[in-house]
Length: 292
Image (cartoon, rainbow, N blue to C red):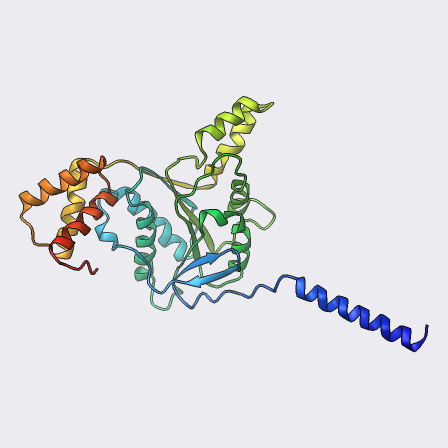
């Protein structure tokens, strides 16, 4: 081969190598979990975006959920201390403070950690990005911090098969779930799947029992199931009273009760969310800021 041919071949190989480098995905850098205590996972760019100020309420303001609050707090604190703990599914009635409780317990746990201990991290993953959960857990595996990956309002509909990625990430696969990561999810559905998904599998599958079992087994990946149910009138009014006392809102007890009950009646529900919406309306009328 002539020198000219050799040079041309080398030049062609170099151009091919450069082209492959341009189309290759960039190497994932290790996330910096010291930047904040809470992050949002961006699946498209595969990065963790720090959250400077988390939207949450103090744990003492969450009323009517005493048992599930204590259970979640104990599980979270054990995990933060390096002890065995479970993935958690918080399911049930809408507006009863499921996501608020997760964020409040995270903050409360960090205040209880021993001096010098690494803070527990909270990482939110959006429902539509759940297929990237294995990638996120892979990035967190080698980090010295412990982290809760949190998905709010998790459920699956129609022909959605991304629940299989969630099953594998929680305790399947060769590597399994990282020891320093737990997964918390909130949902209105106990089994995360729409009823029609289960019914369709039962009616069309060659072996209906196995098909249904395969879908329902998703919720079995959560060691703790914490149920939230519609609150009573007394519990609803206790939430209102707690907010009024905490924020120092000046209103006569009789007027407060009458207005709070009317507010719930016009919305057709009594819940923590309904109570908070009434308090926001009341504070606006009283020209009072709701500073925690």
